[in-house]
Length: 279
Image (cartoon, rainbow, N blue to C red; front, side, top):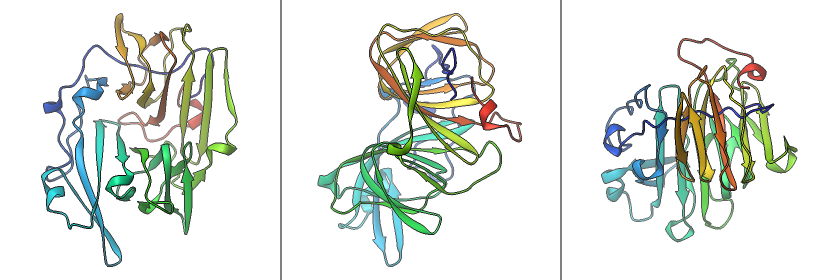
């Protein structure tokens, strides 16, 4: 999300109930949320119990009821997700008491360490991650970075905007914080897309704006009041939001707030310059 005069975020008064989203414990790929739904509140995103364990040279995993059948040495954790038509956002919470971090990378294309530490393979190397780090196209498995510890990790499954899929580790410490006024922005750039971590101070607002791509958003602090298509509503920490390309929006920042997001390629669009992907 490029921020100039306004931030690209869209939401809707239309929300999703838990029964509308396919659970991760069911067989087959989860079905996308309806294209008419823009907000999945935290309370309507069911927390799914996950389990992962080492089986020889492979990391195996199970979800939902099947997690209860995992071996006794399995690490357990929880996950919530929004399976939007243009990409999936998943938030995984790992606890030291349950073994810390272990999760096999399957179709995840991006990850952001919201809190804690982990390690994962990037290209041909294993890298250590700390809070604020981003990885494009990780591989292998997320694991503890040393001793078991708490961690919260956000992942996206979304296509590259340009077709480039170069595995890249972007350290948060190396990304300069920009923005203007009450808006602080860290933009993590890599081939094919970017991740944006935004902090907003209470009392600000944005001008009406549109974007050329979807934005697949996880709210990290709030509440914020959104205005879209003449509707007003509130989102807060833990909510998932999808901005639809081309829809006009603006927002009021009613409390110190934040979010992380990446761009989702609109359905039917083959590619786009990432610098033109958002506002």
